[in-house]
Each structure stands twice: as C-alpha cells, then as structure tokens.
Image 1 (spheres, rainbow, N blue to C red):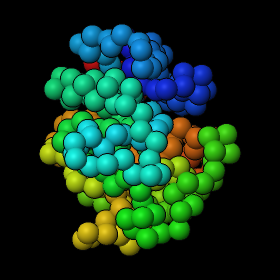
Image 2 (cartoon, one colour):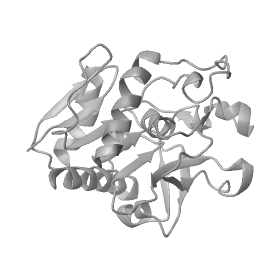
Image 3 (spheres, rainbow, N blue to C red):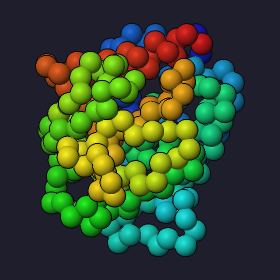
Image 4 (cartoon, helix red, strand yellow):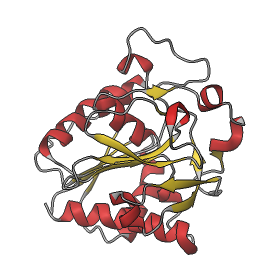
Length: 241
C-alpha cells in the first residue's frame, strides 16, 4: 500500500491529531509528514495528499500586487512546498483532502484567491471563527451544506456544527472547484463565506473544509460522526490506488 503524504509545519502536532484520525479511520499504510525543507516526494506512488492547517497563504500567490494584510501571518515556505505538490497531485488524480489552511492552498494552487481577513471583509465579530484549541475543540458556529453536493452525501447532513480557527477564507473560486458549504445565511451573492469546496468532477476526490475535523473525531453526535466519515472516505479512496 502506498503512503499518504501530509504537509505541515509542526510534525509533532500533525502526528498527534491528523495521523491519529487517519489510523482511527482504518488507514494501515504508510504516512509521510512533509515540512518545509524536506525533499518533495515523487507523487506517482502517493496514495493521497492531506493538506494540514497552519499559517496564512501569501497574497502574492494569487495577486502579485496585493499587499499582506496587517493581521496576516504568511508562511511562504509552506506555500513553496505545497502549491506545486497540489498541482501535481491534481494532474495525476491523487485524492486530496484540505483542512483549514489546506482548503485555502487547494483553492489558490488551482487558480483561486482568498479574503485575507474575515472580520474586516464580512464585518463579523473577530472571535467568531477563532475559538478553541486542538486539545479543547469548541463548536463555534454552524455551516450549511449544499444538499446536492458530494460532501453532504458523505457526511449525511445539510447542516453541521463545527469548530473554527481561521481568519482567511476563499474569495474567487478556482476553476474545477465548487463551493459546497457556507457560513449560515451567507450562501448567495458577494457576502458568501465559503466553508468547504469540492471538485466539480464527481469522479475525483478533491475536497477541502474550513473547520478542523481532526479535533472532532472523538466527539459524540453529528460533529464527531461527520469528522469520522470524512477521514474514512479519504482513506478508503486512497486505498483504492
């Protein structure tokens, strides 16, 4: 069985939360944690690519003229590692799952852009999307899922309470991706606050969520069930080779 590749900054945290979630989902194959400075793997034998949370994507990756927002904390070294890897994985049809920063890098890698600061753009309370910790997850708000989406079918719901630790969000959608979840009441128009993306091609597994399911897999009820289903779907698709 080929390995899953996980891109990260902190390998210890990645192992504690993300690798644990993958093992709980039944993944028995190899796992390679990839951080800036590590040599990029040959993508051909990779079973799946998991893009982890972390610091912000630099705005120059979608617009060379856009300045860094005062509240942004870009990680250009992770950008340099992840964006080419995402493009190669996409070209090869390798399953991709993006979490928090991961949904943002997926969108940017394929030609989309981001809002650099949610409170400034959407006029919401600063703490709404930045609550809890990995060790003590807090269900911060709901998300509304497109009932006709693959994500809704996978999770078995059209509304879900999630945790939230981010201040950037998808702006312009990349070609090949579609929005499938939103902050409640924001689905339509310029005020759409996107919470999840998936491939427009239903035969391809390329999915990103703005929340942190790796911290929810131990919970009872729908939030925990949905988190476990997400990792199970990813590992099953990766195991298909």
